[in-house]
Image (cartoon, rainbow, N blue to C red; front, side, top):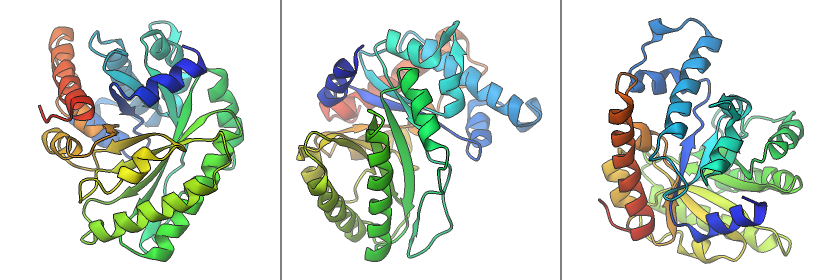
Length: 299
């Protein structure tokens, strides 16, 4: 796929984006959910080797292809690795799946109800390497825990600042100001978040676009103005702690948003499954998430 073909595929939104980007802090939990216990590996290198095996198994599965999975977000180590003798981004592109890379390095401590991203001093080098591997875009996550206007403004400003750096490398940024689904003021805060994002979108230079990865809103339709905005290539939804059934049910209420799920995609996959069982389980998850994303039906 060329860059223009990747852009068109994401814009068309005839599927969803798989989030395969668990990093150091979340990897042990992801492995336990997959059926790999802590005593089965020793040290970070072995841990990342186990999670790479899981990701490769997903990517190689027959059901994981560009017909329903239009993109995949990778952890940096996964991007730099291989599957079936090919660099992972090339393997994804060969299956019709657009590759993205997670670029944030974790979160700062909470201030004004939000957690900003930690500094990324080596970001330019990472973007250069990722672009050279054929990666189409990036993803960067910060977190909002309460409806604090000052905090939300800081999160959005930082997201667009890093997004501009990504765009300067000819790549597509997915801005991810995640609003915690545990927050009691989510409806109020998500309206503030929407309006703050709109201000920054209106300032984007002509010819530039971003993507947005947002929590499924407490009030369906909250992000309709973002979905329709000409400076937004696509709005994708994170599952945010919902199980797959609930995440799909909530997503189906929001026109124009497609999924970018991690736990909700992987929750029933197990290391001990045969290849046939593994692919059947993955296919069931892909079908449900695709229906919620494209047909707006909670399967």
